[in-house]
Length: 329
Image (tube, rainbow, N blue to C red; front, side, top):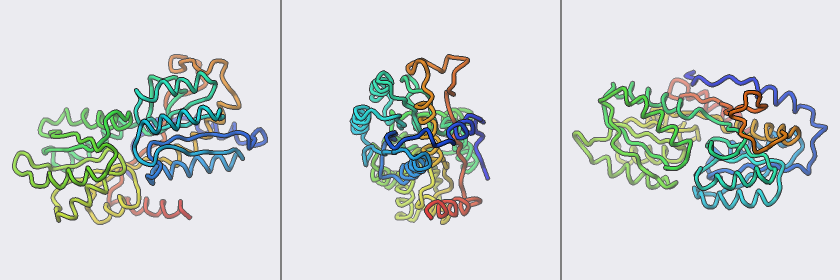
């Protein structure tokens, strides 16, 4: 299995062990997880992990957030969650500039906030749980270089302003900078609508010569399938497509060869560990919640908990399909 090297943290085990005694919990404890797009299978998987941890502890879990990509709607969901005065909030940040002040407002109100999947490092959140997105981008970049033989035009599909996607793109750019014959010809803003990725791909397939797009990279979960569908409709088989995450359609497209590979994250783990860590903070609160623990050598908290990621291609896709099937049973 092509695992991306992650940061080893014994803190995960410590939290699970320290919170294993459920006698301290109460159904009056409510934890919120606020997501960027609740209809995505990715976030439904994260919600399953969040809810499982809540069930184990006998506390309440509420998962909220916009159905479609809408940072303003996510801001409203965060505002409503703060008003409910929960035991803690786990949030994926769609727009760090927009959401930072409201995250700080939660901390000022005495509500622990941990970011998940996408961070807001300038805020007063306690720390971040998720993927090492820069390293994941580097892994994806090395895959593109390998498959293109070190030469070709690459297009990215993303949503500017979302921190995790920007970090992935940064990782790609770092590696591509060492290969002068790899050219980034466009970074497409999908605006959270996969149909835009489909249409853009359709139009780009007519380009030839020096303008031909040799590789498409989807930096988020939804546009990979749309690009694959576009390639299938046009019966194009000579382009490289690297996707993100492991929803069933993406795995199926890897099986049939339309998608070369995808970067698999661990959203279930993010949600599961996220609730347990919020619970730990709630039951063992620090003397000062709003302190910047990143500059404290004796901090009880990490800066970043890496939940891991891996590259999925035809060589190991069946393992992920089997794992997904087991997880839904």
